[in-house]
Length: 83
Image: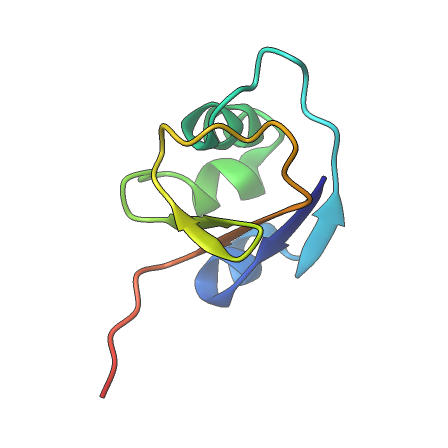
């Protein structure tokens, strides 16, 4: 699946996107975040407060308990405010 990172999540991880194949036990957005945190200090830093980072599955906002099976793209981004 394609993972896309925006704003300071991108800056902390050091790349805008990547293709990854998480293990089968990674079933939800929260599971994916936990798995990513274990991939290195840049991921641990980006997801140090997982409650802050938002996610979208195939361009639709998703909650942490949303299943990721079949997702083509998952994006991670910080909360945004408009003006």
